Length: 502
Image 1: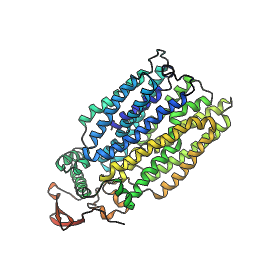
Image 2: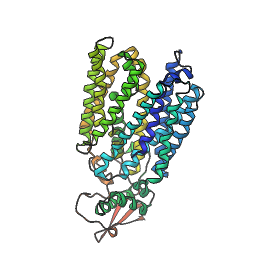
Image 3: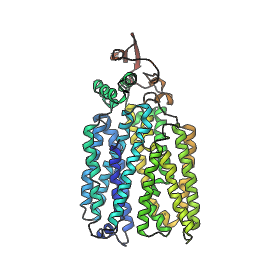
Image 4: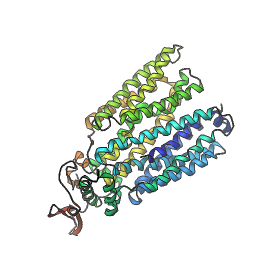
């Protein structure tokens, strides 16, 4: 569970560093005419690299495995972070920010795929939601490192927080030796024995393998069929149900990012500055805000598997709309005021934003898309999701400094309008995947012709190892699946193309 958060930490180590006085002075950015543009380029190139890193997952995760892609991302992060800490000028720093983004997003995209595919259906929400908890641990540690090094006046003090960013990817590379590969990936590669051992070890309950056997039977039967299907973006475009998933994947992450969370998280120091707080207070307020975010992620564990997914998302987004609307009104009223009560209310609503986002939305950012795509297209779906995440970051974060300087509180209106529309769309169109196996989810999108092994995993039927015998035959352009279950042998005929054209 800690793999993705370890990758995410390195981003915040560097974003907390570029505002340190020693960094600005060393890079000759303190008060220079083009300093804002160069700092903006440093942020933007990270996310441009993120777009490239996201697409690496679609290219390699189904071919080489989920773990190798995560390891590759961690290795890129480790090398690029070391070179960032050793940067001698801003040009070198910006270049390796790009490569750092490549590695970070390769890992950030692959980990939700791996987590979703390895955990049991009933625990998928709560175990997946551990990700944002550790992500925020990374944010908190990075921010407080920034606070600590703010008081160090050595000209190389800025290198310390960045160098510490080498630790998370190193720990990730070590930990990968001790975690299993995705059993669904192993089935895609026809390695059923290895896949069964993983499912048996992780999905059995107190020695009872009955659920694990039923789940593995469904998993194996479905993925044997999935292996006959094409896995590319053209396939996603051609089939309406896949197209719907793609639009959902892009739409949900665009809406979540457009709620204002990244602008508040990354540029809250600008907001605090506009409200009259000094540099030290800005850093302390930001670090405290991240501690609250971590605490709200803990609260999320209590509700994540108690509410339908669309309901939880809708509550969170509606809460964001209310909070951001109030924040916009307060900033419009008290930005140039000396009214301490009003200024305090502005800060309070930034903290209140954390309650609704941290409890209802932070986890879903990472795993809802992985739930809705079938196994052979899951890496492609997460690639669309995370590439959109990176591109949306570029749009909002690059615009933020200029927008706050020129239109002030009106910048919040973009977030309010987009999030309102997104909330309505999600409430009426998004299916609920709560407690459903990944193989069952296809039925929610009308893909009944593609659901080969549908069964109730919570029933009392017993499936033994002898009940699961799968073979394939090829005859006259038709794939035949020979299935033996409960002593009854039957043949399922599937068109070679694997897809019905709608």
